[in-house]
Image (cartoon, rainbow over all chains, first blue to last red; front, side, top):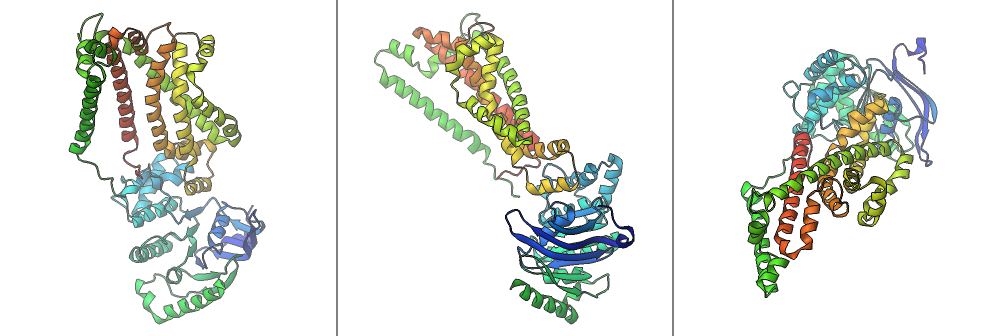
Amino acid sequence: MPPIADEMSDSALRMTNISLTFADGTQALENVNLNIQSGEFVTIVGPSGCGKSTLLRLASGLLAQTQGLCDVDRTSLGYVFQDPTLLPWRTVRRNVELNAELAGMDKPSRQKAANAAIGLVNLTGHEDKYPKQLSGGMKMRCSLARSLVLQPNLFLFDEPFAALDEITREHLNDELLHLFQNQHFASLFITHSIQEAVFLSTRVLVMSARPGRIIAEHAVDFSYPRHPDIRYQSDFAEICGKISADLKVAHS
Amino acid sequence: MNRIRRPSLRVNTLLPMATFACFIALWYLYAKFNYDNPVQRRNALPYPHEIITDGFMPVTDKVNGLRPILGYMWPTVKVTILGLSIAITLGIALAVLMNLSRSVERALFPYAVVLQTVPILAITPLLTQLFGEELGVRLVVTVLIAIFPVITNTLFGLQSTDQMHHDLFTLSHVSRRTRLWRLELPSALPSLMTGIRIASGSAVIGSVVADFFFVKGEKGIGYYIRTRQQKSIERPEMFAGTITASIFGVLMFLLVGWVTTRAIRDWHDKD
């Protein structure tokens, strides 16, 4: 689908009236509208099974909607799965090179890009390790680096830190924000954690139980760079409280 | 992520040796109490040491003992390795084809199972008619016996490729070929190697059994065993031949196991 020049100039992802009904008749998404500008970090929270991940699969082209329009440049897309999805037979370096390799980048350029990405996620010194030698947090960093190599305009994050312990998660949140500021990508992030959503995002969307609809939107006005301690401020807690109230509605 | 705790060397070698000692002891006891007449006993079930003295010895004589046994082993080794190589190549190719297309899988897989279940012995006349009685038919029997584990294990490995890894490759818009070489084959490797390991043992059986039915061409250890079976006086030689063939089977198994370990030890998580 060719982007419409005047409208798309600043939009990294635009979904218009998207609905998806599976072959078995289950309606997963209903009339979802979403517009992510470049430089925005948008997070979706919602009850499990509400179709959050489905929305990402749709944005990436892994699934096709049954109705509506999805405008996105799929040649410049980073997708970070819930699972690190590293290839166990490849070392960290070769895993990070994967996307660039599959995109046909020549060896010297992709090695250079991989080294830079490994540096960005603080994995320098672990290049020759295999995934089974890494901790959960390091695996996720490696997965992040793999997507960074091609410097995508839009990142899709499917609960990437859900399986990690709280401390590692907060640490990776900080690092992710750091990357977000320096690499200037737009993000669509999915999580169960309200705190994580508020800490990372410029905007938080709340999705209803199936069929998934966007039922609320909250702007988060803290300026970047964000200090880890803003999590303990009262205005931070206030936003979390509002989102939590919306989520209770979403569950019903 | 924890390494599997390796049993110590002591346990690794002592336990199998203890089993072996028990086996030999039982053999002696059974042979001693089951036969009254010593000559009858030697010609039916010789003592283990008689297999060495009358079967394997003398070591360098041209007609008796170890040297002719090894002479007959050589063609068996050749047929086994050649047959196994064909079974591996053909088996992987067939599994890849079946993995590419559901229709091909539906069309071929039942016959892969038939291959495994058909009694080779019953179709020897047919095989002779089609492939003669020399090297060709020996290879066919070996391949028929060894190919099934290669096909099933490779196919299982290819089809067990992680769905999220598939998604990852889909997002990069890769060709079918790239997906096969960069994703499916590497992730099938551990299970493929298991298939090859099972096949390596079967290939030895195949090449030995072939000698029982096909008597032209270069004769292997199966021929030696079969001819020694016919005269009871040569019972120790028969056992010596059988043991040598078994040792070869074990060596093949160990060799393939060693190659497997080297190929995947760095990354494969044993479950």
